[in-house]
Image: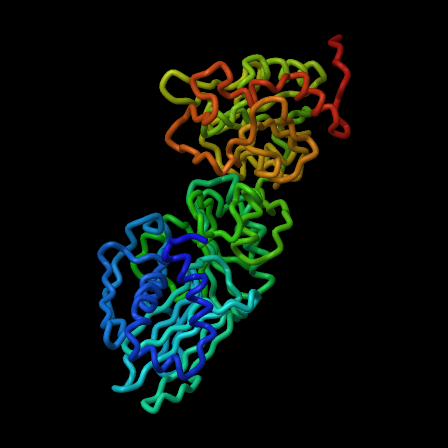
Length: 485
């Protein structure tokens, strides 16, 4: 068993606290042996989004009386500093001056009790039938779970009377029906947000809540008419607001690389898939569904049959690194009568000495076009050929066959497509290998073979014949060359 104190508090010590009888709760105010446990719990369940105490936040504790003194909550200084913050005080008012909510976890705040009395705070996971916290408090008190993903939770507060009698005075089970709930997507993530949106809708339908989704502004235009019962707000602008709305519950959807304790995600996203992780975080069915898209101009952009491609990516390991690959595939597509349209944002992309250009022979529809315009091109295309990047997710939402060329990510990472091009005969799937921490700052990231002849062999080893044979499996795909008259 790990010797980490936090694991002890969440595991053995938590069960110990949960199973104590009423008389032992009273003894906690007198028995100094319990002081370290109370101190650890106070530090563990700090009233803020990250679940950890910040360096500037102090919890003063009287060893003799085991009283957690009120402290000033400082702004988070670790990973959660970049996230949308909930109000410092829980948003829902209950009896006896108790405040509570489910914003990024279960949170409860109790007022200073009458002299000689105290509170007993209990937090439960009803689905797992686990007591997460059972703690006495003899002053102003704050408690919050270390888990920030969805929990079907229950908050109970009992009053400890002067004579030691314990009386339940407050109890709330999670019930978001007709209540305001916020789901936050990180800004600037196209493919992830497209994959996550159906899970937000599943959550709304399951709980019958009034749902707000904070998301990147370019995506709002794509979604707001497709999901009319969801309110969309710009995540960047919302994060800047000093006064936040009083949501009953909030959830942050993201890819948490160092979440070893699964505080933010019940399952590591590298094991369940980029999109399905949202289902686990929100506690809904993780079965994938394509996003619903709305395109205002639904007319066909060109009359001739065409294929859309996207060859650019955010990092070199996502590219199809076969130097002849795109040339041969485009040559084939044009020979059978398709026009080939490239809708990447950038015509050229790279870093330092490595630059990737629009494939030769493709028609240029790159540039700062809206997502709805790109979706229009995709919707009327015969099919899409691209990488494990955002535009593949957009093509999936557009409802056309999607050919994905990948090696850096395992096929389980993205949505299922029968037209996946992937080779197990070369090194592959380092994105999904939790032994390696993806380096977002290294454009040439290749953890096992960087600066060797095997660098990027995961896609370098995918031949154009492999891609073409996969394309030819698409029903209705042209296979015979068009003879010019």
